[in-house]
Length: 117
Length: 110
Image: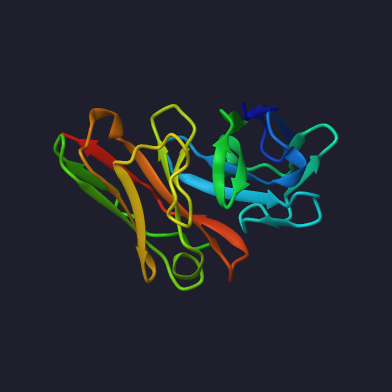
Protein backbone atom coordinates (compact mmCIF):
# COMPACT_ATOMS: atom_id res chain seq x y z
CA UNK A 1 0.00 0.00 0.00
CA UNK A 2 1.35 3.40 -1.00
CA UNK A 3 1.81 5.69 1.99
CA UNK A 4 3.09 9.24 2.28
CA UNK A 5 3.50 10.64 5.78
CA UNK A 6 4.47 14.26 6.31
CA UNK A 7 6.03 15.61 9.47
CA UNK A 8 7.88 18.67 10.71
CA UNK A 9 5.11 21.24 10.71
CA UNK A 10 4.44 23.57 13.60
CA UNK A 11 4.41 27.15 14.78
CA UNK A 12 7.32 29.35 13.70
CA UNK A 13 7.97 33.07 13.92
CA UNK A 14 8.20 35.24 10.80
CA UNK A 15 11.69 35.02 9.39
CA UNK A 16 12.22 31.60 10.90
CA UNK A 17 12.96 28.25 9.31
CA UNK A 18 11.38 24.82 9.26
CA UNK A 19 12.16 21.53 7.52
CA UNK A 20 9.32 19.30 6.42
CA UNK A 21 9.77 15.59 5.75
CA UNK A 22 7.66 13.13 3.80
CA UNK A 23 8.30 9.45 4.47
CA UNK A 24 7.29 7.26 1.56
CA UNK A 25 6.53 3.55 1.58
CA UNK A 26 4.81 0.90 -0.50
CA UNK A 27 6.33 1.88 -3.85
CA UNK A 28 9.67 2.40 -5.60
CA UNK A 29 10.25 5.92 -4.29
CA UNK A 30 13.46 6.44 -6.26
CA UNK A 31 11.65 6.16 -9.60
CA UNK A 32 9.02 8.88 -9.11
CA UNK A 33 8.92 12.65 -9.34
CA UNK A 34 7.62 14.10 -6.08
CA UNK A 35 5.87 17.36 -5.19
CA UNK A 36 5.00 19.68 -2.35
CA UNK A 37 1.60 21.39 -2.56
CA UNK A 38 0.16 23.73 0.05
CA UNK A 39 -3.29 24.90 1.05
CA UNK A 40 -3.88 27.96 3.18
CA UNK A 41 -6.84 27.74 5.57
CA UNK A 42 -10.06 27.91 3.60
CA UNK A 43 -8.21 28.41 0.31
CA UNK A 44 -7.34 26.35 -2.75
CA UNK A 45 -4.41 24.15 -3.66
CA UNK A 46 -1.15 25.83 -4.61
CA UNK A 47 1.82 24.03 -6.12
CA UNK A 48 5.07 24.73 -4.28
CA UNK A 49 7.84 22.63 -5.79
CA UNK A 50 8.79 19.36 -7.42
CA UNK A 51 11.86 17.19 -7.80
CA UNK A 52 12.72 14.48 -10.27
CA UNK A 53 13.53 10.92 -9.38
CA UNK A 54 17.26 11.34 -8.79
CA UNK A 55 17.11 14.87 -7.41
CA UNK A 56 18.88 16.53 -10.32
CA UNK A 57 15.90 18.63 -11.47
CA UNK A 58 13.89 20.94 -9.25
CA UNK A 59 11.37 23.70 -9.90
CA UNK A 60 9.66 26.16 -7.60
CA UNK A 61 6.68 28.46 -7.54
CA UNK A 62 7.70 32.10 -7.82
CA UNK A 63 6.31 32.77 -4.33
CA UNK A 64 8.88 30.47 -2.68
CA UNK A 65 11.83 30.70 -5.06
CA UNK A 66 15.02 31.54 -3.21
CA UNK A 67 13.48 30.72 0.20
CA UNK A 68 12.47 27.06 -0.07
CA UNK A 69 14.60 24.09 -1.12
CA UNK A 70 13.26 20.69 -2.08
CA UNK A 71 15.45 17.62 -1.77
CA UNK A 72 15.20 13.87 -1.40
CA UNK A 73 17.10 10.95 0.06
CA UNK A 74 16.27 7.89 -2.00
CA UNK A 75 18.16 5.63 0.41
CA UNK A 76 15.77 6.73 3.16
CA UNK A 77 12.68 7.00 0.92
CA UNK A 78 12.17 10.52 2.19
CA UNK A 79 11.30 13.84 0.56
CA UNK A 80 12.20 17.13 2.23
CA UNK A 81 11.25 20.80 2.04
CA UNK A 82 13.58 23.27 3.73
CA UNK A 83 11.70 26.49 4.32
CA UNK A 84 13.63 29.65 5.23
CA UNK A 85 12.63 33.29 5.70
CA UNK A 86 9.09 32.22 6.45
CA UNK A 87 6.28 34.73 6.10
CA UNK A 88 2.73 34.86 7.42
CA UNK A 89 1.46 34.04 3.94
CA UNK A 90 3.32 30.71 4.04
CA UNK A 91 0.84 29.52 6.67
CA UNK A 92 -0.83 26.44 5.20
CA UNK A 93 -1.21 22.70 5.27
CA UNK A 94 1.69 21.27 3.28
CA UNK A 95 1.07 18.07 1.36
CA UNK A 96 3.57 15.85 -0.35
CA UNK A 97 2.30 14.13 -3.45
CA UNK A 98 3.55 11.59 -5.94
CA UNK A 99 3.50 12.15 -9.70
CA UNK A 100 2.62 9.32 -12.05
CA UNK A 101 1.77 10.94 -15.39
CA UNK A 102 -0.08 13.61 -13.41
CA UNK A 103 0.56 15.43 -10.14
CA UNK A 104 -0.99 13.71 -7.18
CA UNK A 105 -1.91 10.09 -7.82
CA UNK A 106 -1.15 9.72 -4.10
CA UNK A 107 -1.16 12.35 -1.36
CA UNK A 108 -0.10 12.45 2.25
CA UNK A 109 -2.38 13.66 5.02
CA UNK A 110 -0.54 16.98 5.23
CA UNK A 111 1.31 18.87 7.96
CA UNK A 112 0.27 22.30 9.21
CA UNK A 113 2.75 25.15 9.17
CA UNK A 114 1.76 28.30 11.04
CA UNK A 115 3.89 31.41 10.73
CA UNK A 116 3.02 33.87 13.45
CA UNK A 117 4.60 35.93 16.19
CA UNK B 1 2.06 32.49 -11.56
CA UNK B 2 -1.23 32.51 -13.45
CA UNK B 3 -3.57 29.70 -12.57
CA UNK B 4 -6.35 27.90 -14.35
CA UNK B 5 -9.89 29.27 -14.29
CA UNK B 6 -12.72 27.33 -12.68
CA UNK B 7 -16.21 28.53 -11.69
CA UNK B 8 -16.29 28.96 -7.88
CA UNK B 9 -19.48 26.98 -7.44
CA UNK B 10 -21.90 24.65 -9.19
CA UNK B 11 -25.20 23.37 -7.77
CA UNK B 12 -27.18 20.43 -9.16
CA UNK B 13 -29.91 18.15 -7.95
CA UNK B 14 -29.62 14.56 -6.80
CA UNK B 15 -29.19 12.13 -9.73
CA UNK B 16 -28.60 15.03 -12.15
CA UNK B 17 -25.48 15.60 -14.24
CA UNK B 18 -22.85 18.23 -13.45
CA UNK B 19 -20.16 19.43 -15.82
CA UNK B 20 -17.23 21.30 -14.30
CA UNK B 21 -14.91 23.34 -16.49
CA UNK B 22 -11.28 24.40 -16.29
CA UNK B 23 -9.85 26.96 -18.70
CA UNK B 24 -6.17 27.51 -19.32
CA UNK B 25 -4.08 28.34 -22.36
CA UNK B 26 -1.96 26.68 -25.01
CA UNK B 27 1.00 26.39 -22.62
CA UNK B 28 -0.86 24.27 -20.09
CA UNK B 29 -4.30 22.70 -20.64
CA UNK B 30 -4.20 23.06 -24.42
CA UNK B 31 -0.88 21.31 -24.76
CA UNK B 32 -0.39 19.23 -21.63
CA UNK B 33 -3.94 18.28 -20.67
CA UNK B 34 -5.44 18.69 -17.22
CA UNK B 35 -5.92 16.36 -14.28
CA UNK B 36 -8.87 16.50 -11.90
CA UNK B 37 -8.83 16.15 -8.15
CA UNK B 38 -11.59 15.90 -5.57
CA UNK B 39 -11.23 17.12 -2.01
CA UNK B 40 -13.67 16.61 0.82
CA UNK B 41 -13.49 18.97 3.78
CA UNK B 42 -10.65 18.05 6.09
CA UNK B 43 -9.13 15.44 3.77
CA UNK B 44 -6.29 15.45 1.26
CA UNK B 45 -7.12 15.64 -2.45
CA UNK B 46 -7.80 12.49 -4.47
CA UNK B 47 -6.99 12.07 -8.16
CA UNK B 48 -10.11 11.48 -10.26
CA UNK B 49 -8.67 11.68 -13.76
CA UNK B 50 -5.14 12.08 -15.07
CA UNK B 51 -4.11 14.52 -17.81
CA UNK B 52 -4.86 11.90 -20.46
CA UNK B 53 -8.44 11.68 -19.16
CA UNK B 54 -7.91 8.25 -17.66
CA UNK B 55 -9.57 7.32 -14.37
CA UNK B 56 -7.36 5.67 -11.74
CA UNK B 57 -8.45 2.31 -10.43
CA UNK B 58 -11.40 2.59 -8.08
CA UNK B 59 -12.78 5.85 -9.44
CA UNK B 60 -16.47 5.65 -10.34
CA UNK B 61 -17.49 5.26 -13.98
CA UNK B 62 -19.97 8.07 -13.35
CA UNK B 63 -17.02 10.43 -13.80
CA UNK B 64 -15.54 11.25 -17.19
CA UNK B 65 -13.04 13.86 -18.29
CA UNK B 66 -12.49 15.49 -21.66
CA UNK B 67 -10.72 18.42 -23.28
CA UNK B 68 -11.52 20.80 -26.11
CA UNK B 69 -8.81 23.27 -26.97
CA UNK B 70 -7.72 25.09 -23.83
CA UNK B 71 -10.70 23.97 -21.74
CA UNK B 72 -10.90 20.74 -19.78
CA UNK B 73 -14.18 19.36 -18.45
CA UNK B 74 -15.20 16.87 -15.79
CA UNK B 75 -18.68 15.37 -16.10
CA UNK B 76 -20.32 13.60 -13.18
CA UNK B 77 -23.55 11.74 -13.92
CA UNK B 78 -26.15 10.48 -11.46
CA UNK B 79 -25.04 12.87 -8.73
CA UNK B 80 -24.90 11.40 -5.24
CA UNK B 81 -24.55 13.12 -1.86
CA UNK B 82 -20.94 11.93 -1.61
CA UNK B 83 -20.09 13.88 -4.78
CA UNK B 84 -20.48 17.10 -2.82
CA UNK B 85 -16.88 18.34 -2.53
CA UNK B 86 -14.33 20.75 -3.93
CA UNK B 87 -12.94 19.92 -7.36
CA UNK B 88 -9.60 21.15 -8.67
CA UNK B 89 -7.93 20.91 -12.04
CA UNK B 90 -4.18 20.97 -12.51
CA UNK B 91 -1.79 21.11 -15.43
CA UNK B 92 1.91 21.46 -16.19
CA UNK B 93 2.66 24.86 -17.68
CA UNK B 94 5.55 24.51 -20.09
CA UNK B 95 6.21 28.26 -20.33
CA UNK B 96 6.32 28.75 -16.54
CA UNK B 97 8.06 25.42 -15.82
CA UNK B 98 5.55 25.07 -13.03
CA UNK B 99 2.40 23.18 -12.18
CA UNK B 100 -0.71 25.32 -11.96
CA UNK B 101 -4.04 24.68 -10.27
CA UNK B 102 -7.46 26.07 -10.82
CA UNK B 103 -9.05 27.95 -7.94
CA UNK B 104 -11.44 25.06 -7.35
CA UNK B 105 -15.17 24.52 -7.84
CA UNK B 106 -17.42 23.76 -4.89
CA UNK B 107 -20.02 21.26 -6.07
CA UNK B 108 -23.27 21.25 -4.11
CA UNK B 109 -25.72 18.38 -4.55
CA UNK B 110 -29.22 19.59 -3.71
